[in-house]
Image (cartoon, rainbow, N blue to C red):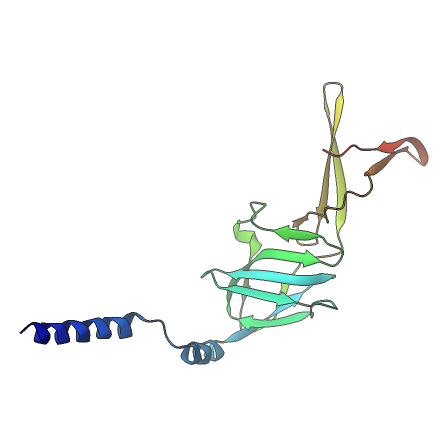
Length: 179
């Protein structure tokens, strides 16, 4: 009697495993190939790595070890946001360091026509100076064409320098201390 129950339990266990196991890799690959594809037209330059996150959590990663990322990328139809980007020269952006989760940061890829995605260079450098009592606070930003803020390579071989002009005349110059 015990062996009969053992056989039934073994069969039920096998059936549960067969139902709950993920689909095989080849079946999932065939399903991925059946998905409709759209085109994403990159408007920026000097991109060596681009990571996009689809709304369902799927990650699309594109890398170019020696040259710039192609101008048009084919990928499954859906809504994407920039998760991470690396530019030649060591500059990078990560959505985990910033709060760029607003609706405007999502791009919808469709089958009908390529969608333009502005990201990367040319970069814009800005310095905002605020007075806090007798101290001047310098806030530096390096921004890409899509509004993403980059951090630079962490080289500390040379101190950062500055020059202040009044019109065409240089009125001050110096070096910053790290920290």
